[in-house]
Amino acid sequence: MSNVNIDWANLGFGYIKTPYRYSAKFVNGEWQEGQIIEDDKIVLSECAGVFQYAQTCFEGLKAYYTEDGRIVCFRPDLNAKRMHDSCERLVMPTFPEDKFLEAVKMVVEANKDYVPPYGSGASLYIRPYMMGTNPVIGVKPADEYEFRIFVTPVGPYFKGGAKPITIKVSDFDRAAPHGTGHIKAGLNYAMSLYPITVAHEEGFSENMYLDPQTRTKVEETGGANFLFITKDGKFVTPKSDSILPSITRRSLMVVAEKYLGMTVENREVYFDELKDFAECGLCGTAAVISPVGKIYDHGEEICFPAGMEEMGPYTKKLYDTLTGIQMGRIDPPEGWVFTVCEAE
Ligand SMILES: *Cc1c(COP(=O)(O)O)cnc(C)c1O
Image (cartoon, rainbow, N blue to C red; front, side, top):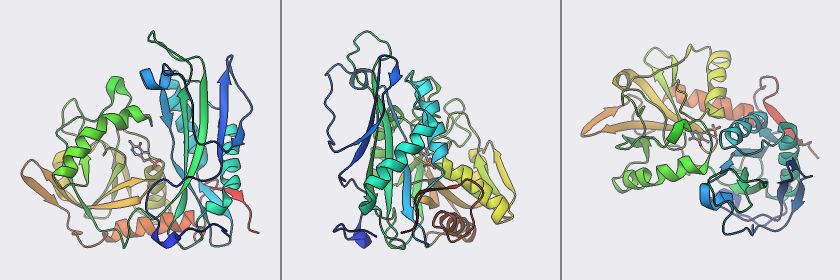
């Protein structure tokens, strides 16, 4: 158990510097052996590919203590695979998926004291990322890259229970320039900063983006996928090539079907259907599921029957089952839980 002086119960969702990070460099067309380092600073040329043409992408996952004292990560192989896809789209060298898992293990083990205790509601957030590091002024991919992972302990996304949020239908289209909506990269987040700032100023927690072509179909928010529950208890989640394939959403589809016996529909979801759903939620690694109580659409409101006081019953069951699997209280499907450290 931990030796560091952190008030786990009052941790927020912010950055806390820990002693160690992982770094591997790509030079002369190959990845060099990665290592654990102490320096949190990165010193690069002013003309590095990352600064000029935004050649960078990232991942996000968590490590936590299970009930029986192991430190585990949830489906990190899917983060490795997704980062591979992001790198290909940004013409960056892919980082071998087995090395990715090894690196996650190394960096979590090195920072073991920063893994919050079981039951604290906090976890260790893991941030792998890659960037083009050599000078590039003509528009082309960099030749040299660095893959790094830092970790930071984070508190529960919601303090004092997950109260449903109100979101708005965005006046903007989701980034996705040249169809990059399915990759996890800062470029998409940069494009969502202005719309989210506007939404916050207007008192909304998030933006719902519709498909840019017809603005009739639901895509996702700036950083989370949607899930909906029908009045007869079906699980519905939007299918689109331009949304990020959320690992939480893909896992919840399995939980809904295999653990809760629900019918699962992964299909195009029309905005006009929303008024008929019973529950709505946003899903992602950070919050698992954030319930949505209300959607504001240019003067009109869609209010879900589950209300604004607490998570709806199906959302709650999905949340409890997924977090139960992650924390080792419920038997996981084969390969879902990756052990970083055995119990001491
Ligand atoms: C990371 C992310 C999500 C959530 O994905 P998870 O794998 O569940 O954490 C959803 N949408 C976007 C745009 C993201 O970047």
